[in-house]
Amino acid sequence: MVAPDETIQRARALRRRLTLPEVLMWTALRGRRLAGLRFRRQHPIGPYIVDFYCEDLKLAIEIDGQSHDHPDRIERDRRRDDWLHRQGVRVIRIAARTVLADMDAALGVVRASAGR
Image (cartoon, rainbow, N blue to C red; front, side):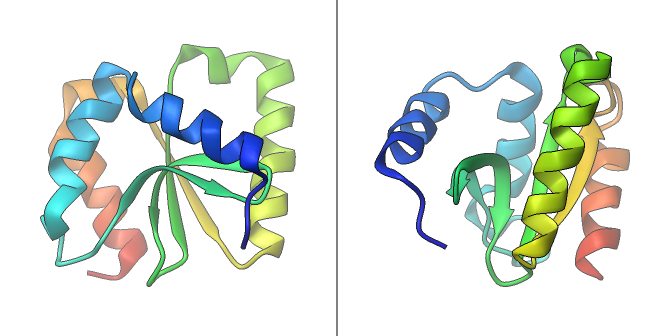
């Protein structure tokens, strides 16, 4: 799916300033390190940007910090996930605190979602 130019530019900017949990997850995913799957970071899909995306599986990974616990953000994330689902993209959400505390558990969620 083609993304608007503005979204593409925003994704490029986000790639330059990943959060610590995103850096750790990217280190684990990049270069086909997880089950030979190719992931992209801060990937634009339509009007949205997902933290990590595997095109072969149409799988998006979102790393959620504390701001995602706010009621307004929960609703916004739900609408966004619904839109992505309608495009055929599965979205898995992993808490940033899980990535920081137990990367093996976080990667286990990804493996299970990937069926690997």
